[in-house]
Length: 154
Ligand SMILES: [Zn+2]
Image (tube, rainbow, N blue to C red; front, side, top):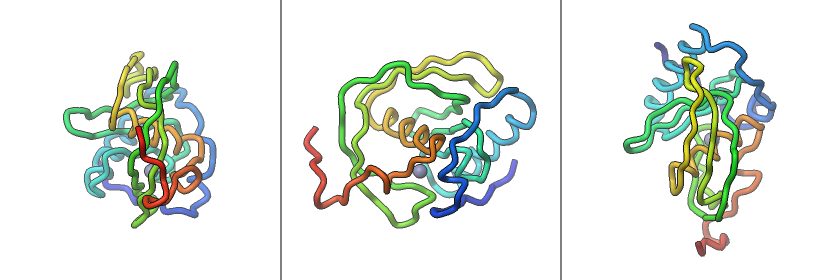
């Protein structure tokens, strides 16, 4: 395991569309292990592979009792909306209000290639959506609003 360097906006890799993982092999296991270690080192609650310069559809989350990796995640369905504050390890010092779905049903693969289905709400659903945006080259500066102007009514 190794802590990798988090890349910052405006690094171009953050704007690329990440490509699906085709093989859940030892390289993927190493990437995911390094991503967990990097996320922990930077005190993040989530990290997407493009943030360590790797253009693959891989994310990791660590928030309260949730700690998991998702490979090739897709939103199956979503409902509701909620505003809350978000930061991003690739945007040091930036905090914005971002609108997200309140509830999501996500599917993907585990690091060993097993199908995973998740139904989440609240902040964990927010983290997943934030990291999935990274896989599509989207950052919170694209859709977030300054804290003092955002409509944060739920
Ligand atoms: Zn981010």
